[in-house]
Amino acid sequence: MKALHVQRAKGIGGSERHLLTLLPALGRSGVDVRMCVLNAPGGDRFVEAMRDSGVEVASLPAGPDLNPIAVGRLVAEIRRFRPDIVHTHLVHADVHGQLAARAVRVAGVSSVHGTPAFYSREPFRSAGRLVGRLARRRIAISEHVADFIRTKGLGPPDRIRVIPYGIDVTALQSDDGARREARTSLNLADDDFAVGVASRLIPGKGHDVLIPAVGAAARELGNVRLLVAGDGPERAVLERLVEQHCAPGTVTFLGFVADIGPFMHACDALAFPTKPELSEGFGLAALEAMAAGRPVVASAVGSLPEVVDETTGRLVPPSSVDALASAILELARDRALCERLGVNGAARARTEFPLEKMVRSTIEVYDEVR
Image (cartoon, rainbow, N blue to C red; front, side):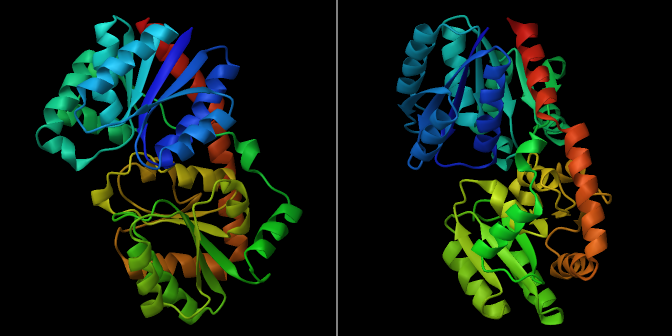
């Protein structure tokens, strides 16, 4: 079986990290996979990472949101690779890729990775419904996303399949030596309680709630630290917010982190303070933290309660500085609780979200449509 995946990329976020896990695993399972990147500024980082993973990549210019030239280029790419399945991700690739697949009569599958508000207005509403008619299956990465697809009419209910993100837990496990090395590299003392956050620095991710929450927690317990992995347009704003709410040395901005493992190993807990308006489809960083044996403090919004529960972390009301600070302090004061939640998280990641289950379910969808 041959599968061509298509996605517009301008960096490496959650959906890109998902593909960097899924495609090599599909290849190991016997699927001949190829990635076609509709390359926007910054997308070269994803192209290079995918090639480093051993997957063949074609890079095409993304162009504008509606780009007939991209359809023609994708038609040519499909004819070169001759796949059984064209699997598209996110709206730009969905529209252009599903039109190209239909033009050459190749079965199309579309993965929906979030619940963006733009599907409530034109022309995105019509574009999403068109893709739902063209694609033979729409994969939702959570039940929350599946409900969104049904509510917005983005696909016939009988074509929707829920396949949560999966993860290789063994790849994120560490020993005491690796943890000490990771913490030393980040100038963390043995008794520091390091809260990590791993996401793009964009509105809606909740950094503007987390920073004052960490500041408040650090005023009660002087050993609370915040490690910020990721970069984006909000960095300067957030750095000013740190100056307002946190003592010097409390917060460290790490920029883009290519290898998330050592970062997770260095942390004592991970924060996922997403706001409702962001339309979070899954919360991959939360699952990565669980796989690494770290408790997660997450907003109780969207799909996050499907991933995190009270046995693996803490769910707090979104946009509440006080609730977030209280949850951080609870964990910082009770290291035994932290350890128990982390052990439970690793077990949940292993049993509920294994990589093998995601791969098997994806191949089953391919078998349904080809």
